[in-house]
Length: 145
Image (cartoon, rainbow, N blue to C red; front, side):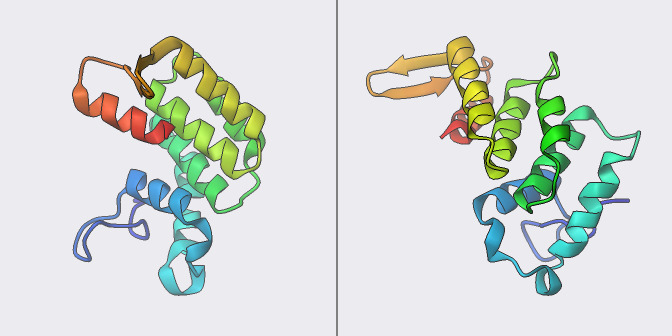
């Protein structure tokens, strides 16, 4: 049901939740909701939160998107970020959402925790070794950057 007003990679493609979140985080002020449909995306993201069929990861991404749009979701995002079973990539998204809302200390705490748990140093470079899958390592490291 949701996704009709989310960002799509191609004009004929379906809306994608993660792409929408990344777009909003990268340039939150670059969109005019009345022209781009992102006002409706806000509604989609809020609707997703109350959908019992959605995973905790999807709901966390929705909170991050709402945070990027400046919606007052700091308490909900902090609660979601504290879930003990949260995957490293989702913890990174939570940190980005917290940073978008101005909670630099919360974002930094997640960053430090992940670096302590998964960080690997290669000279002046650092990566997050979150799994044996190279693409997962690249994604997590890119989100950390």
